[in-house]
Each structure stands twice: as C-alpha cells, then as structure tokens.
Length: 239
Image: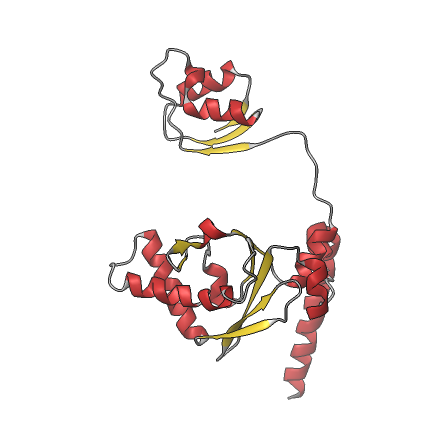
C-alpha cells in the first residue's frame, strides 16, 4: 500500500508539472484550464436567446443528458447504458462510411435519434442554435445528419460543440480575432467551362461573389486550368 501511494503521488506531481508547462507554452490551453465551475444561475448569463445546450454525461453504468437554456430549469433525460450508446455510435459511423452491411441501419438511426430527440423536446421552441457538450462515445457522433421527427438536425439548428458551459463562458470572454483577409475553401472543384475564358468556371465565380482573395483548393481536376483561372483574377491559392 505504501508503494502504491508513492506511485500515485509521483504520478500526480508529474501531471501537475505537465499541466503547468502546457499552460506556459500554449495560451489557448491556459485560457480554458482554469475555467470556473458554473451553476444553473449562470446559464442565463452565458447562453444567448435562441440557444440550447445539451450536456451529455456518460458514467460507467449510467448515462444521461442535461438540457440547459435561458430562463428555464435545467432538465435531465436518462439515456441507455454507455455500452449500448457506444455500440450505436460505432454502427452508425460504419453505416455512414459505407463499411456497414446495411442490415439494421434504419434501426440504428432510430436508436441514435432517441439519444437526442427527447432532450430536444426540452429545448425552448424558439431555439435555433444547438450547443452540444458531448461525453464518451457521444464525442464521436456528428449531430448534423441525425434525423429527428423526419428532419436532419442541421436543417433545424445551427450546431456547435463545446467542452462544457464553463468553457463556453471562457470562450465568450475572449475577443474573436479580427482580420480583413478572407479565406474560402473549395473541395474537388471542376474548372471545365463552355466559355473560352477560364474565369467563367463556377469555382472562380464563387470566389468573385464572396470577394475572396485567398483560396485553399482540394484538386482532383485539371491543375493547369485551375492555375490559369485563379491567376486571371489575382487570387492566391494553395492546392
């Protein structure tokens, strides 16, 4: 027992030393490392109108989700055991990636919807932004494509993710960096055009419409056509 206690104390000292080093070397970590623990009274201060926070908790045998919004009591919804949630998440991800055999995919999607649907009913009717604080296997589940009551969540909500309400408060206190330089990312565009002018290609028109002067482009098309098009309108681009 003495040896085990000494190993525990040594591990704790090493952890604290690494934590302090990370705070010195990484300003973003330092900004959230000392986030104060908030209570239900702080929800109205941190959350904005139209926002709803789903905070998941997965323990060893039990799981659930807290629903937090302005000017309403915090509500709790019990969920299936963590092992069952892990199975659903893995099967659903396999289905989306094409690795599934297809057997039971509809059942898995319906089960996944039950991890979210009851909690959404506790969100204010006017909520349009969903803030998700995942835990355990839920951190591997993208909420946007989940179908609840016949609609994908992304069609109903703007969805974002955060570690906790406390971290959200810390992030709100940090001023967002300002920049007058825009960036537009384009994935696998087609630069072919019926017109002789390469700047008539749709990706280039998108850049013009957005007023962007920089682009990050993932190419599986004609690299030379892309270079001619972007050079013609003076856009810096990174293939």
